Image (cartoon, rainbow over all chains, first blue to last red; front, top):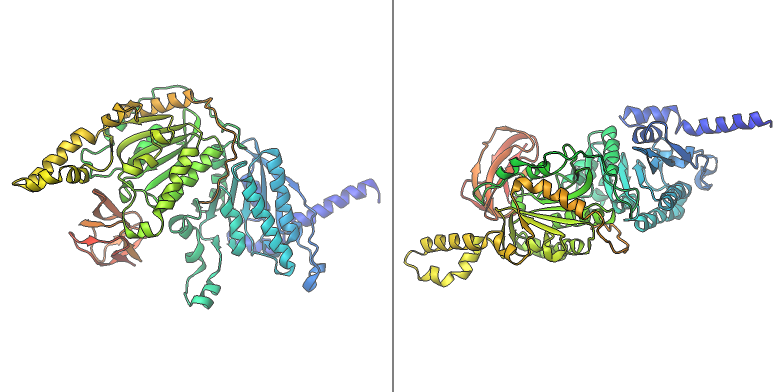
Length: 513
Length: 69
């Protein structure tokens, strides 16, 4: 062969692989409203930046007539490219090639990309669309999954890992995304479950559709498995790009900082957020929107455990992670799901140098036998644990209620908050005024001629004396009592002040919680 | 689908009646729980089929408040 023939051979071999599973399979994928793996990678990355690795990898299976079977790229496209000019590694399972099924070499390609990403200190994005294990490859396929899980866990907290579910993801396959930092599901075209509807029907007789069992809606509202549901593939991939914008490429680096021009940082609208009566709720998003840079908020798990809000945002161009009790939902009380949701988010922020902003209006941990029996103690403990060990800047603003153990759990001074601010509306106390007055003044109330009037009087007395920020401020548990309007300016100042905050170099994995 | 109480409390307002068309996150009523008024958001678009509680009822967490079709 001449040199030019050899070059032509490279082109021909490439063209064969670039055709994915062939025109028919590609057409079928498109008819389902789905893009091919290669089209998705193009959509994800900056234009023209993708470099493919392992294009010519081929499976080694000979069982059940597999020897002759050609599976382009072995069902997964892998490589690297740029997002906003920063390198990311990517793999995309190709449903048009043998259903994107995972065999030995398919898994080896994913592992190689993960190893390269860790060595280079860059994020990994996985686009999942696979029928599952390639049965013909038996334990080799199984081992492939195991090797991916191992790498997901070992890379956790060192480089960001994002999974986008764009088709089926069932059985053991679900555990790779579950070990990554974020799961984004495309609505109506993706499902995740350990055992599918047919197995459930056969074993328990329970009838349930795949969508109801493990669709995007289920996993973003009921199970909390996924962080975001996207209306379509484009929206899902844009969300990946946006998520990456808040994070550094690897642990130990600072997140990207956007240019910011100092302006009037006063936010007078915050003076009117807290209702006069403490039994009235409000939407904590009003506070979040006012303290963050315009249009910088990206909320995660908005419809799951919405009694706590977790979102990324920016203050003066710097990335922050906001954790806020939501009085609109369950009074903002902390339950098992809220504790787990917040704890994992805090852990993630700590791993990737994203400062924490904690907005506190919490009446307590949710009472009830359900919660106690399901282990609110061990779930709530995660929140205390991650806040305590987190070494990123920790800024806490007490907006209103901060009672008892839940006050401590929301990053109080005692859990290492660098700054605790309180609004004049703050009520930092062991419990709410009504409960406290009933205990403290029990005898007086019982002995009174009109116990109800006495009770009301004592509640008022207790509120005036203790349901304020001043008791906590007198002990230094609150650093500054501030006007709500100056909150953003104070946070900006603190972030600047803590820019060089020292951190112990201990490994910070983002363990699934 | 059932609209359930997410928290134990007392029903203090019901804003809809059987036959009303509702959208996701419409406020179907209000509960008092944890000494706080709590809106009851609509989980799914549809029509209110049956209201199973009245103002003043004390409900447990998970109690069915109304059904939506």
